[in-house]
Amino acid sequence: MRHRPTSRLVGAATLVLAGALGPTGACWAQEKGVPSDATAIPMPPPAPPPRPAELATPAQAEAPRPPERPAELSPPTETARTREAEPVKPADGAEIPAPPPRPAELSTPALAITVAPVDDSACRRRLEHLGARFEPLPALANGQCGAAKPLKVTALADDLALVPPVTLVCEAAESLARWATEAQVAAERDLGQPLKGLTIGTSYECRGQNHDPDAKLSEHSFANGVDVMGFTFANRPAVSVLAAPEGTPEATFLTAVRGRACAFFRTVLGPGSDAAHANHLHLDERQRNAGHRLCQ
Image 1 (cartoon, one colour):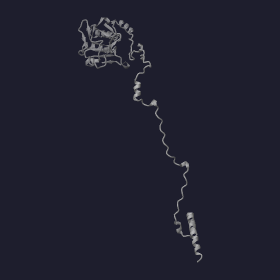
Image 2 (cartoon, rainbow, N blue to C red):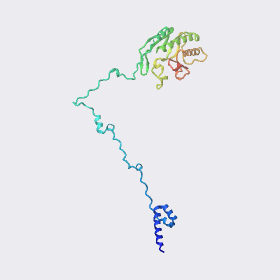
Image 3 (cartoon, rainbow, N blue to C red):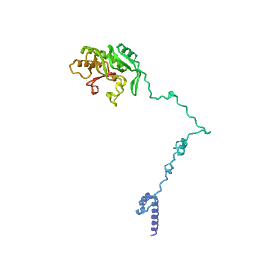
Image 4 (tube, one colour):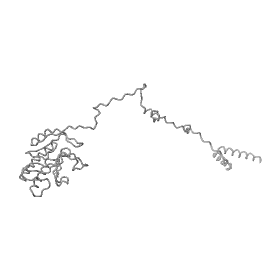
């Protein structure tokens, strides 16, 4: 009976020791025969270790402000614009002298182009050798139309008259003279009569093609084309370029002279080409790409 208080004291001490030792102490208490309900006493959780200084979140720093815009880049104020618009005057109030006038040689328009006339002296010598009668005319100029060195041709070889005389540049006049010699041969062969003259419709005339004001300028505008209306003879009626009855000597003659014209002129148009050339032969020296010729 004297030993019981001692046992109770030992059990209480063991319980306190088990709480201090945690689970290990509880196990030890169980091993020593301490009641298991002693482990149910709650214990405060251990405090976490302090966070390292290098991992600590720094206080949010204030974002840096952009540098101020330089004054020279800032848009001018209304006052500044007014000041810039005002002319600067010398301090003494005198007017600023005007700049010197632009030299005359620098005042010529940039687009003004002077084209040197073509040297046609060799062509004129050939034309004389062919027996043509002609005289030089002053330069022709009418807007976009004109010719630098036109000629007035009154007759070709063997006194073949041109009625009325034609105004042509030398190249076109030479082609007409060479073709006329072929026409002389055809007249003797097909009609048995020498050719005495050519009836001319138009030579130089400033106009559009086919008399259309909206069309491209005709070669007549450059004294580079001529219209032949017919042929005259000494002892027989004239032959018009209008289509002659098929199988007649006149039809044979017209077919021959029209075909030979294609050998001398770059453009040959006549009856059957279109309505605008139904009654005459249009002959010109218009240059085309790759030397192309139009013979219709």
